[in-house]
Image (cartoon, rainbow, N blue to C red; front, side, top):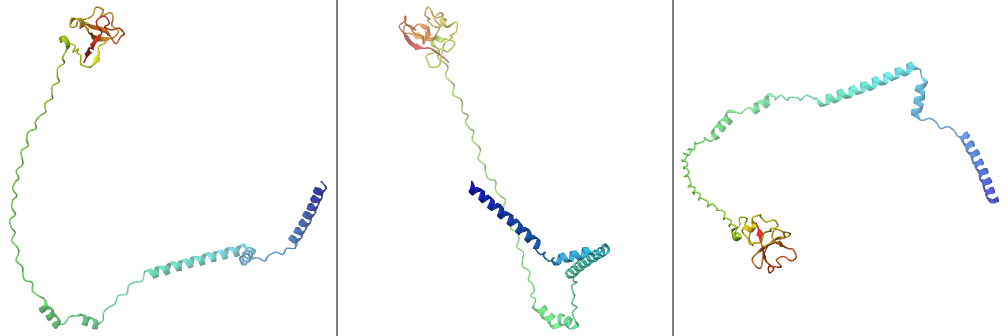
Length: 222
């Protein structure tokens, strides 16, 4: 604790001395001399208002005259008229052709001989090319679908060709097929033919055609 107190006292005393030295240097500092443009500005501000206005007007007129001179000089430089050179009498005499040169020119020019124009040959008329007659296309006749071969000539086309199972046969089914005695009561399956030739309505159910020798084959609709 004593060491910390001593260090704090030493720092405070040094800071006080440094601040006193800084204030002393600030008081004894010499002011810097003003620059040329600062002197001119101070001189201008020290004059009266009339003098300032007059000097400003003169400066504006000077700038305006300089700009006018620059514009006129540029226009005069770009618009110089082209000087026309008139030939002298000796030059005109030299340029005119003499009679002897005219005679030489006249004798040296060859005469153009007319060339015979070729007689136009008649253009042959093209012969029409015979076009082949198109052959008639044979129409493809649709193949007739074979009629359904119904068992026992039934009008519903029930047969043994695989198709849809018959769960709800027509009410006149037993008029064309030999049905078992319980055909319309044991109707929980589809129509099958038993081994003895009778038809049962319990196909797919356990014990179907059990009293008629078992299932022989299934009847389908289309």
